[in-house]
Length: 108
Image 1 (cartoon, one colour):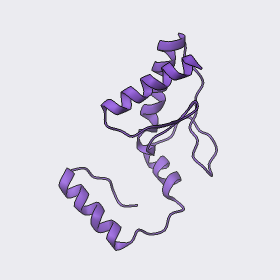
Image 2: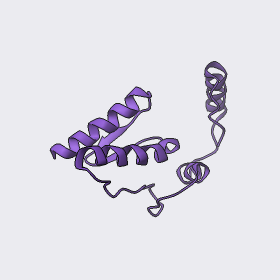
Image 3: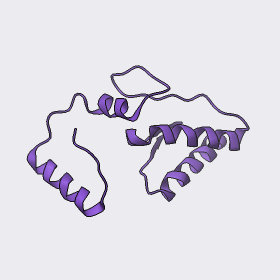
Image 4: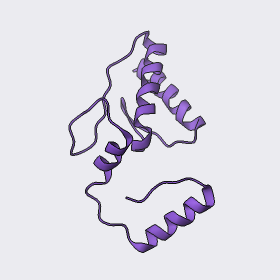
């Protein structure tokens, strides 16, 4: 358990420094699907640092099989495919956020 905690600490430190939310549940980590590839890299690096080798890891998106290599667009589709069309209020807030921050989140 100590080793798990050390790995988790390194993962949390990485994402906290980048101001990206990450949630840990036992030996699993939840991030926005846009950061899944980065999470895998950070997990590998942290496990190598703590235990001296890469530990096995995989992605899991509810309703989908586990998969190792996906493109960002495929991840977005997997997460949002069952959601309804966004309401106008949401679209207005999203547009205001994008204008304020200069970030393009995109419309699903």
